[in-house]
Length: 491
Ligand SMILES: Cc1ncc(COP(=O)(O)O)c(C=O)c1O
Image (cartoon, rainbow, N blue to C red; front, side):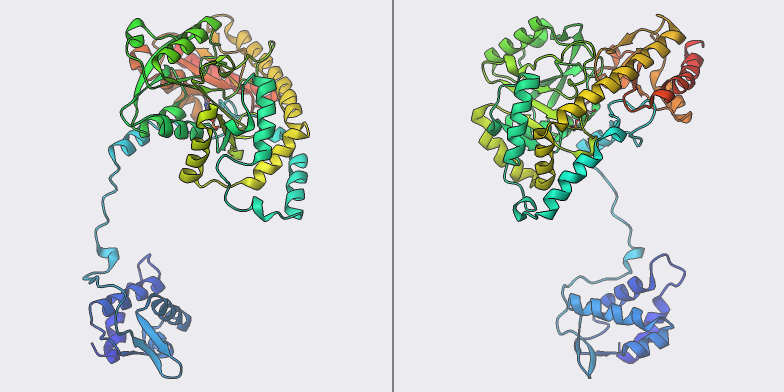
C-alpha cells in the first residue's frame, strides 16, 4: 500500500465507538500494516501533523504512536527527513485481524487451581463484628513504630534496602530467639530461626523442603482453611485426622500408616480451642521419632490465654529434633505486617535459609530492623500485655452477652484463649446458611462446618471473633446475630 493511501486505510478501520482508545487502535493498525507488509520496508509514513489532520485525531496521539513504534523497532525517524518503516520488522507474526476481534484464550485453570478456587475460604471483609482471627489493629502503638521507622530512614542504610540474605535480619533473629525461649519455651539459637512473611509461607517452605508431591500429611479435622489450601496446592495427600478433648486423635488404623508430615495446633486447637494434653504430646513426639515423621507446630495465637499462663510449646519437649515450629506477628501486632518465623532443627537451618532466599527472594529488612528494635525496647511484650487485658475484657463481655441470651442452651467451645470462640448450634442447623444470612445484616461469622474436611464429621456452629470489636458494639451486634440464629433454630 503506498503511504499516500495509508490515512484512508486507517480511517476505514478505526472504530470510534470502541472502548479501546484511539491511541491503542492506531498503534495496532500500524503494527499490522507493517507486519503484513501492506507498508513495505523503507516506506515513508505521513508526518504526524498530516496524519492527525486526515484522521481527525490529536497530533499528540499520532506522535506518541510513532514514538512507541520507533521504540519497538517498527519505524525509525531521521531528523528533518521524516519517519520510515524499518527494514526489518521486530517479529514475523502476521496479523490477519485486529486483536480485539480475536477470540480470547479460554481461562482454563489447572486441576489444582480449580480445587484451590473452588475451596477458597478467604473473606472480603477483614474486620468488624464478629470477624474471627483479627486483632484490634486500632490499638497498635503507631507512634513508637513510626519513630523507629523514621530513625532508620533518617540514617539511610543501603544494606537494609536490598534483598535479604537467607533467613532474615540477624538482629530480629536474635530478638526472636530470646522471646521464643522465655515466652514459649522454644529451644533455639538465632540461626535456627528463618524470618518469613507469615505462617502460610513458613508452612509452604517446610512442605517444599521436607516432602515430595504424593507424600501424606496429617491435618487436624477441623483445621484452618488457609493452611489446608497451601497444603493442597503443594500436591500432598491430605489425611484429615479427628480431634478429641486432648487434641489430634489418630486411630490405630491411622497409626499403622505413618505420614511424612503432621500439622498440629497444640497450644490452641484451631478452631475448637482445646489444648493438646501432655500425654498426647508425648505420644505424638514418640510416634514421630519412631516413624521419622516431621511435626509442624502452628503456634498462631498462644500469647492470648486468659486466666492461665500460656502453655509451653511442643517444640520445647522435643529431644529428637522432629518439630518445625511456626509463628507469626499477625495476631500479636497486625496481620498486614506479614512477618512470621519458622524454627527448624540446627541441621536444617542453612538449607531453609538458602531455600527461602531462592524461592521467595526476600526483602523487608528495614521493616525487620524496626521490629527487632520494637521487641528489644520492650514494646512488643507490653503491647501483648495490654491487648491480652483488652481481649480478656471483651471475651468476658461476649460470654456474658451470649449467656444472657441463651443460658446453657447453646454451648461454647474455645472461650479460654485466642481471639474468637465457637458458638455451637444444634445438630442439623445449616450454619453456612446462618452465616450467609448474618452477612446480609452486616455481621461476619464463619460457619464451623466449613473447617471440617470430612463432611460426615462436620459439626454445626459459628466462629465468633470478639477481639476486634469495640466493647460497646458487642452486645448490639450479638443481638442482631441472635435474631438470625433464632430464625434457624426455631424452624
Ligand atoms: C491456625 C492459623 N494458622 C495460621 C494463620 C495465619 O497466619 P499468617 O497470617 O501468619 O500467615 C491463621 C490465621 O487466622 C490461623 O488461624
